[in-house]
Length: 382
Image (cartoon, rainbow, N blue to C red; front, side, top):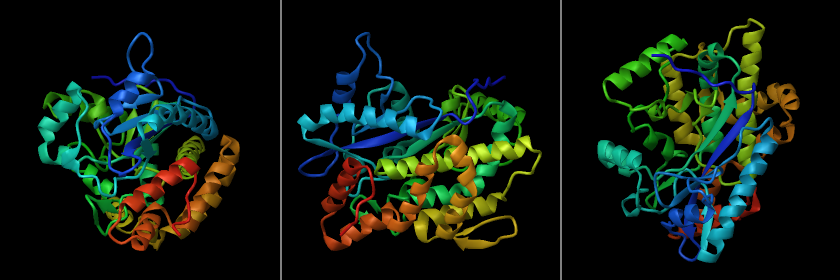
């Protein structure tokens, strides 16, 4: 089989932001996604181009267009979120984003009435029903198909940087899990989810893999490959799916800028004939676990030599290295927001501080996440 890779402008960017719908008074999840989708549906029917359905009826996803810069993509998201809030505010429903809802119970959630979702739940059963999780996806355009998999392999070295910065799911079903990102470990239980196979290094090998998956009935189309980092042939992008849900615009734009800059730098290295960084699968798996467990306090493996460093130090240095690329891409201000994430300690730490100040009341954590969404920036837990 042949998998066509769409043409897209180099380092163009698109962002997808999954938002939870929560009750203003109780903080619990509300199953009102269909009400929102019906209200914004185009006159001729179908979905709004910037507001989409998701697996669960407590969720809507806002998406940007394919833009040249991160600020332009963020403007799209702000407009879509404002449209949603115009519908949810009268319903006494708030929007929030985190990797998990602090106390929502997975068994109480309703699945969107769509065949693809019903098939997923039927096949995956208990694990599929557990998917009460929220994430952020960032697409970055790649102008040549032969670059896609080498850049994918290079970006895996920065997996722990991205997950640690975004880790926001310390609570699950009303309990502190001890992890900064419980979402990352939950999601990898689905078939074809998790780290991509690093043995797939060429487009021919990817086509072979997809052919095998289709032949054996593991997937019905390419989108059912749910890797944390994957090619998106229909858009002509590399899709970064590593991150937990992000509660506010400042942090979201920072992570999007970091992703865009990493892809562009890798593309420049290919153009200049330089080698891209690669890491062994066992180091990649360990880095994923460390960043999920410890978040911004993770000590990560940097390279094939096994050198290690505190993730905040590694990220700070990385931002400085990428500054010239960010200037070229028009996202210097957004990339600098990474330093604000480091300063505040990240969402998982802020949520735990709020919980500690309100023993037995995880509703306080929900209220804090809602406040951060409305403020567009991280807020002091105090």
